Length: 527
Image (cartoon, rainbow, N blue to C red; front, side, top):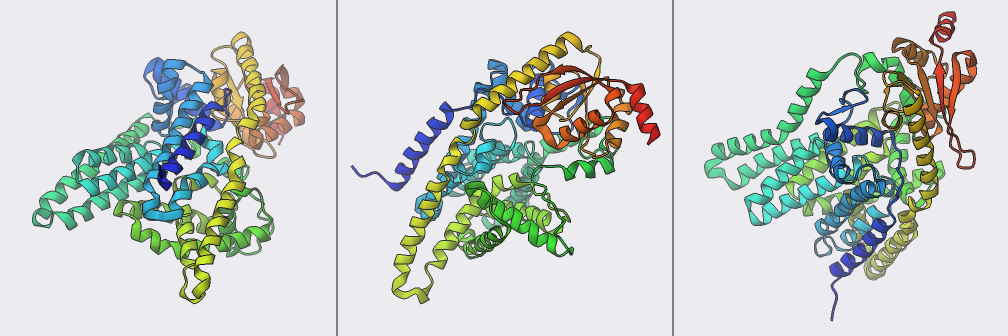
């Protein structure tokens, strides 16, 4: 019995899926954002309020917390189940990618696309995490598949399901707004192409539908406006973070490379392009030297360029507009910012499209007429080379599995901190922390996130402003914990150590201090 290429792809994906679900980490993958989403989900279940850390959650969109609340409601904080649930959602995204970029329509490029996404360390490190990135990828790919079904069948159920998914995407990540805009434009174009005899009536109906798609985000925005106060934690809240403080914080973000070698402003977009595009290659094969990364970036851009038209010919209107708007946003970020801080996870929702473009570009290059009799061997060699690259990237699938012991030690440490807090820190105490999600959720006390300012003056001013009685440092979040630890060493009389949950063997540094506000105020005044 013959097995089709697509069925073989499905079988391999199923086997990989089973492996990935079985090896789901049973201990919390601690990202600051995951603490925020988890804590908010807990608040939704306990009080039906979208709050975190004793105040309205204005920082993160509600979609992810609502999804996390589903397994949390039935299983509590069982991280094997919570992270397995998010892993299952990630796998749905991979399956939809395989379905959307079917071999029959996209050839080898579509056949390998879901595997390349799955084997990217960028995807793997977010695969189980209680954060928004792979959820957003799954929702957007499902919406695109529903739109294609609607175009093929004209069945209203696919259009409505597409609208629901697009609307929900705007409650998961900011880029969902681009999807809403793309759908609105697509509906108007669709009305013009297929309902010309009733164009006005159809346009009004579809415009109303587009408005309904944007309604949840509009209501969310109004709610934030009404719930906002100067003291509410929000990355965009200049009063709370301080504009100077926000700039200081950004300098310490992961992926923020030194810009000392940049001599002129025009070099920033070139260097940022290399870091961002070459960084995608590094997500499969590890770090590269600057020179090699520049070369790889150039090759990738050439392949994308040659693959752009073949991809566009296969894409539907919604896909074209959504990818176009998203890439315009990414390009603006790459070309206009005058620093080397790169948000690599912006790649995730675009990754399947970029992979397909590169694959189609490689096919185009190996199909040039001047190759003559070498054309067929070139195409076979390119396919074998792509398969070899995929095989080399396969070990990334186990990236989180090998961190299980580290995750266990980190969880034991924060559980000790939680117990200490319950027994020793008053319920109404205000605590300065070095992240805004994990530690506030663990200690269950009103928390104030510090900055990573080298001289600690901004952080001290914030601690005085909010009368913080305790400070918790955790080297898991080194970009802000390291300056806080330096502050403790610089002003030892202002901080009395009351808890040490460190584990030298696991390289975990977790400590709590009682803050002497009077002494701290004296230090700030003297400076």
